[in-house]
Image (cartoon, rainbow, N blue to C red; front, side, top):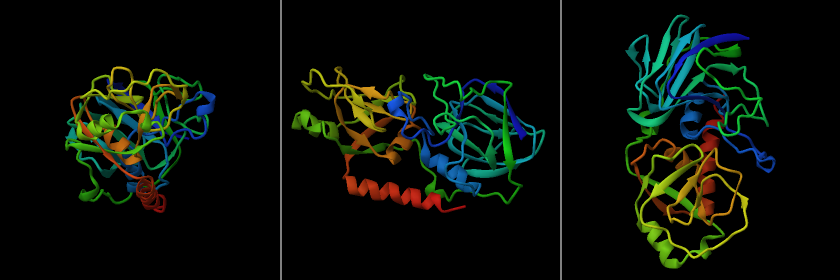
Length: 307
């Protein structure tokens, strides 16, 4: 086991994340995992390692790492004004770091969450088959990375040529966002005119949005549904509380809920939404089940076969 870096400052949030916990929600444990899977997958691809290798998710920034061992890293996701030894570094690239280097993240310039992947096998405890941290659950088997804490690896890949994501695959987190949604089995409970208005409307991301769910404000999504039985909540579920403002539930969502749901957004859309700051504008677009399955299947096929 080799300690590769030390977290020396954490004004923002630094979490170990992988692809989350599968088949754990019946225990009352949420899925968790990387909020932006597109950026997560690309970070591992840049290092030519398994697409589900755990890494660090850095939210908001104001974070500093001291590098304690030579290591190759990849940086994707939000532009948090990263610097290496005081010099600006670009995202969506890999870098060879040396012992004694200092890697620092400032505050967001574009996006909200950056991903820092290391070329190696992270030595970090698992709970329910995942290393992902969920703040509200605080599972004892998954510790918190705090200032002064180190990140260790059981194996480290050697330095290699610098790699970069082709520009056409680098997302623009400032452009208007349209979320693909598959209407669900409760959508018939909403009046037809409400659903029409929902697709014609623009919504604004609210400050209370988080990894649990993105709260949106806009024209009210009205309904007369008084009560529903609580049930399991799927990733991307668009639920409508009594105030009529939709909430898109993401990785750290509750496991059960009883508010009516229009449907679910796609994995791609959820990744893009997780990078939007308060005030961002979003719309919804109706998509079919088969096309969404083909779309996400193509993503997984692209990233799974690179190592």
